[in-house]
Image 1 (cartoon, rainbow, N blue to C red):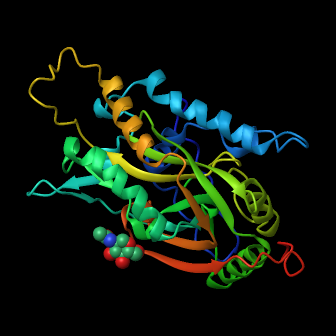
Image 2: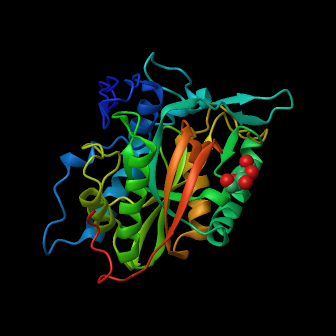
Amino acid sequence: MAATKPPSCSTRLRSPASTAAACFLPAAALFLLVLLRRPPMGSFPPAVPGGSVSSRRAELYGRMARDLDERGAAFLEGGETSQSLTLSELFDTREDGAVVPRLKVANPPVRANVLYLDPEFAAVISKAVKEVFLPYFNQAIWFQNTSIYHFSMFHTSHHLEPIVATVEQIEAEVGAVKRVSEAVCPLRIVLDRVVLTSTGVLLGLWQVESGTDPADIRSRLREALPHAPQKQLYDPVLLHTSLARILGHPKLPQEGSAQSLDRVKFFHDLVAQVNRKIRGFKATVSELWFVEEYDVLALALNGKMKVRRLQFGCNEGLGNGKI
Ligand SMILES: *[C@@H]1O[C@H](CO)[C@@H](O)[C@H](O)[C@H]1NC(C)=O
């Protein structure tokens, strides 16, 4: 595991008057690290001039696809080490067997900039995922809400490096992000593949056909938001949506002998079925959302949040992303 140690938690205050924010939720931090197991953005070289962003993206996706083979279906082991957070710790099971998120207040709230996928597209993906996975998992699976499919881009405060801000400072961040969004052009994207991570998260991984590249959007946001955490959570070329989280063992038909069944192969087969249905699916992205997540992983778990929806302007002359 790359996440051998919870990252140390430092809190930067933008306002001296602010009260110190407690180091919160190393568990959530671990969850994200375990989820993608990528080093922070800083350890990746910036886009090489002449080098292709899309080929770096393809290479990253290849590595992510191999995760399940290399680490196995770790999500089925449950609480295997004292430090690993299994997805099931984020949910409760009701008496009727349904899973409900175990929401925890994020203090301070996380401030995330995400690209938004219109529910019209999300519904197609969600339908395919449910058709394949529901028969085997019934209620031991959590599906991402199709109203809030998103691609995480850049955080101005996150759990590893909480940056407390006043209401005015947050409004200034929103203004800076708005100016960035005015220069961004709609993205035409294509679903490169669906992968299942060893932690049980089903991810959609996307390539960009046209529009402003996510790597470019992230660097514009970095420039526009000088107080944002130095360490960001994702590889700059990554463009991903979480589709579902597997929380328990599959229900297998009687004839499938549990002994002989290769679990990793079983999951690969399910993922291959999803890929046959939706690989190559195309979508257009035209909104950037500035989201204050008041609950941990609010965007993933239907938690409490405040959203500012910003339309892309595709107007270079208007905004260059600087405050
Ligand atoms: C899905 O998200 C929308 C928008 O945030 C919300 O109104 C709706 O209640 C959510 N659905 C569920 C099942 O929580």
